[in-house]
Image (cartoon, rainbow, N blue to C red; front, top):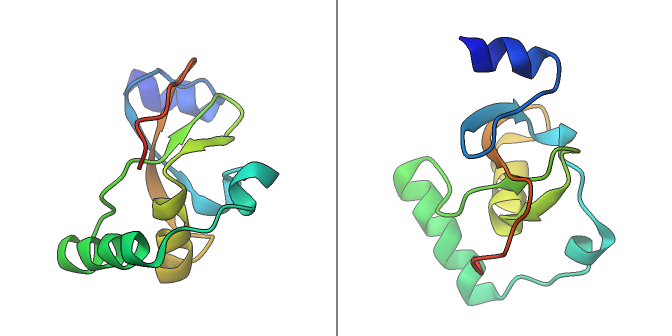
Length: 99
């Protein structure tokens, strides 16, 4: 309950799952220029279709900038739209685990 109240003031605890509107996520030009490999993208779509959620977590910084999980972002955007609420995780410092 305490985390929910803090989220209303845009204060998020690191390492916990939050549900935010997909359209609120900021995508950097670096991610926008990435081409996801067709084999990887199809595998991740199949995972989403079978399970109803994405294989990789969406990781954000405190300013809602995407740090990892771009393929999950693209799949959810296509499948559910920008108004969908999606699970995300916030971090202070992040080293990519390679999606």
